[in-house]
Image: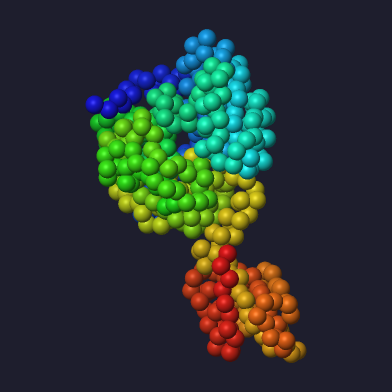
Length: 409
């Protein structure tokens, strides 16, 4: 039998976390409701302390340490949200904390972790390296290693989010959220379904993984955790190659479905949340919305999409917004070869104005590989209103005898 935490354990955890974490808002989304055909709310866990749900599990885990363990201190490894959660929890509870982070960690996450009082060690180029170093440090010093998802107390702490979901929307039918190692969805599914059963109801829970890092579908099919080879994804917060043993044992019984989304889907979701909900969400936190927008979710009643975090580097946000605009057919960069004679730039500008495309940036050069002496290259970034308008813009240029090439973003 799977050792699923009891409802009373989640309720005790919620009581112990009162005053240490925020009860984050649950807001309706008309835009997502129109897409899904049922009322949709978003859980703004991006407004949680440290900007992520991770502080729930970290704080509960640390609160359960013995006085002897607290005296030895804690150690963790992370490129962001888990690091900040452990650092803040340690600061609140007066426990020394050492966090190993990879050299390429975004500067805002590094500064935030240090700002919460943790000793940060920058070493290695991947989180896997940081994890090994943290484990070595724990063995060498006696510090308690705080795993980001594969511990029962962490699952229980994250599950307090499920209690909030039901308390705020008792009629909820479906909950959609991201999966990395599985600690969040395991806790939420267990707490939420137990709370709903107590009220004589059932709730569906759907997990979402990035297509490039999706070990749960093959693991669920195999009936055991399976490690997969991951590829880069903008959703680095859920870039995990193998499910956690403890979360998987719960998820295989309590999570109703797991779907995947592409990076384009995620970028579109971040853009939609910025424009329509006026909230900033990191890629891993937007995958639930991405699944709804991509048609991967069906629901018969009120639905909640969990926005699990908002810690996105401003430089990445800039790139993601541009990518999201391109993926939605609202932005494209064109390269057009032109004969080097007066009036060609004006002619292209006239055609773009006729098509209703807004020029954002122009590069006009006579220098380039493979160009003839009598040629110039015009590269333009233009704003369009969607895929149909994008196609119309290209056709307008083609009908006038030009050969525009869309440059991949």
